[in-house]
Every structure is written in C-alpha cells, then in structure tokens.
Amino acid sequence: MVKKEGHSIGKRKKAIAKAFIRKGNGTVKINNVSLRNIKPEMIRLMIEEPLILAGDLSKKADVNVKVKGGGIVGQAEAVRQAIALGLIEFGGKKYKQIFEDYDRHLLVKDSRRTEPHKPSRSSTGPRRHKQRSKR
Image (cartoon, rainbow, N blue to C red; front, side):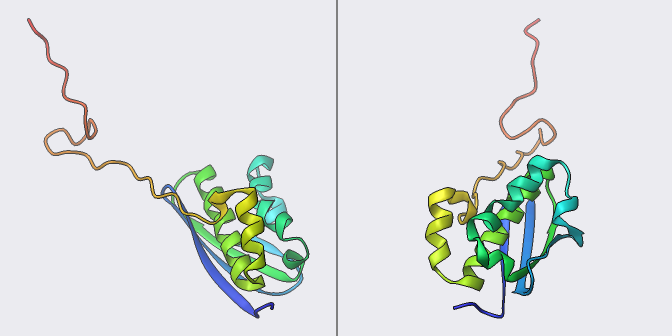
C-alpha cells in the first residue's frame, strides 16, 4: 500500500530535519539542493542509506527535506532518520523491519542532551568548579 504523501521528523543533537515525501520519480532535495550535489561524499552516502535499503520505493517517491540546527554530521543523521521514517509512512510497515535490522538509529531518536549549566559558574559548565590556589 503506497500512500500519496507522507511527512516525518528526524532529530539528532541540535539538528532537526523535516521530510516531505510525495509520489514522483525519485528526486531527493535537502534544503532545495539536489542530493548528488551534497559534499563531502561521506555525508551524501550516509543520507542515501535509507533510500538504498528501500529499493524500488525510493524510485517512486520524491523526497524534500528541510534541515536546520546543529553541525554537518548531526544534520546528516537527522536527515537520514527523517527519510527512513517518512518512507515507512509512505510505503508501509514492511520497511520498518528492514531499517531496524540495518541500523536502529534510523528509527529511534537519540534522547541524550547536554546537562544545563549551573548558576554562578555558568560559563565553565555544569560540574567543574573554579580552580583554587592553596597559597
């Protein structure tokens, strides 16, 4: 059962990606840039993983992703997660097991966050005290 469209959200660290998937001919755009123009190549290959695993389904769908926040790798991991979740919604539940067997992070958001800084030493971090001299 292939739906006409679907959307999903992927998160990694500070990066948030929103993927919109429609019936089409297999074009993939990230922030209005074609996937084949994404550099470096490692990042492009990371983003392509769910599309390769989905096989024929990715050739029947146009994927448009908007991503913001975080760094380049965090954005790439958020994008691949959003694409994988969107393909599951678009193509059906049979793809869920394929993605889970390959890499669980394609489906599960990483809940780890940085600890908030404590008062009176907010610039130094949450735990570290100011260095003291004994003499």
